[in-house]
Image 1 (tube, rainbow, N blue to C red):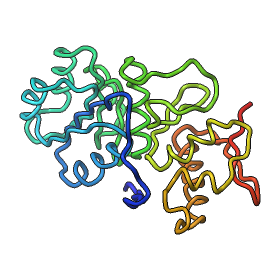
Image 2: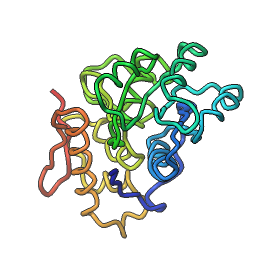
Image 3: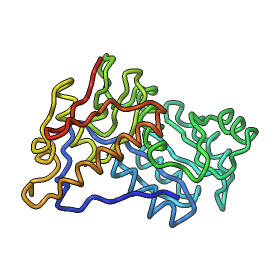
Image 4: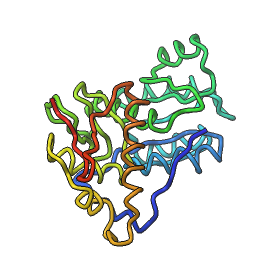
Length: 246
């Protein structure tokens, strides 16, 4: 089960991007999972999400606009998801396809990848892993995620993901991205708690400073969970935080 704390409206300003967001078509027949979990969280990661529940809706959507990536359930009520993946791959070779299914057995995974999927994820899915998979796939397909040649921790995709020195991606919420931006801009230097809070909210006088520590803890846990490596964001008691670059 996905667990996520939503930021309050007062914490978030409108995100302004110099690029159009990556367009993800989400094909999932579970209404609750699609509309209450997957779609809103992927939008929080900066994706433009179009959500549908039946394969019969797919042709009309593809004629209207070809998405960058499709997140596809296999157990659809009207058409087998493997057939959908095969048809998608035949019609649009450059599109990214991520299969998301409860069928976790290896032979299903092999079949999904053979039918044209770029990635195969089993339910219940970690929403951070799904977001990271989509951003990694976008970079591999050379979609609109310009990634500088760099070997340090950095923000990519207009700030919607954290990139490791090895180029692996961790999808970020807008609040997480805001916190990391000043730290990444000042590597190996202490950024004061006050400066970090200013990056998070305009209401600095009413902001609970413990929320800053909670957010840092959440980012560290996310990086470890998704990448399996520690994130070198260290606390400096009485001052703030420092992101250590080697």
